[in-house]
Amino acid sequence: MADYQPYNLKENSVDTSAQEAKNTSIALLLGLCSCLLNSIGFIIMKTSHINSAKAKSERMFILQPLWIAGFLLTFIAIGFDTMAMNYGN
Image (cartoon, rainbow, N blue to C red; front, side, top):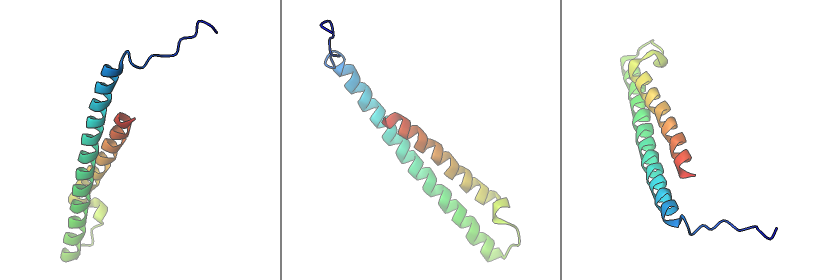
């Protein structure tokens, strides 16, 4: 037990601090992109619903290309959220 040396955080403090700042910036950027994609996806999906109601279409909204595009954007946004959480740790 006499040979135990606590880990010295000051040795790599510059590298660690720079890396943390970089990771935080990446996490923030990914989070903002996720928010933007999610919002655009929901707007596109809502537009598809409105267009379907105006046309009084009997077609299911899930089969409409505009709705599918909005859903895919929302799904991609979930991926950006996951990446942001990974960089934020």
